[in-house]
Length: 183
Image 1 (tube, rainbow, N blue to C red):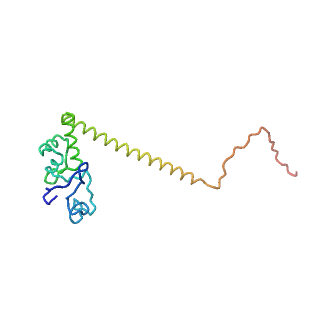
Image 2 (tube, rainbow, N blue to C red; image 1 turned 180 degrees about the horizontal axis):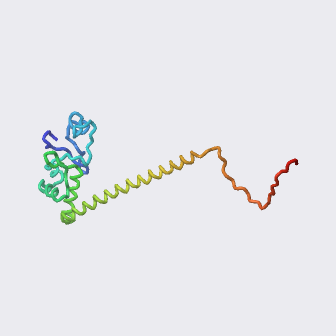
Image 3 (spheres, helix red, strand yellow; image 1 turned 30 degrees about the vertical axis):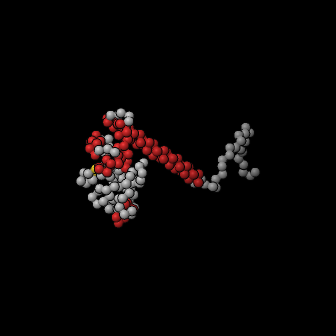
């Protein structure tokens, strides 16, 4: 991108090229001087969720009119990030979602309210899958911790103790007689 946010930033995953092509000088973060997008340290990485595309570029990449993107934003179908000046910035993931909304509308004949519900349900499924994975990790960690605690308890046993062995019960009667003086 050039200094005013226009230009060709490259293509998105699933397209013909990488994210962020033309964003800068090739330094980490794609910005001059090797600094991140927020002016942070070098090493800022672009992901599919990094908002980099202005509405005109996003419209071109998704094959939709910019006014359609604004309408989808108003309806809550695809909500891009905003700049400090309230300008829209689309990520590669947003553009994939725009293409999916268009496909559902054109090919499957689903209305925008139905598409919104589908997107909400897909997001809910993704969130639940993430939560299940987190809980499975916690269960695995709890199992490891329990095993470690059990090993610590076994390691704390005193080694000078002898295991208890049960004595055979006998029916013999033992008579005790105290010793008398002088015997």
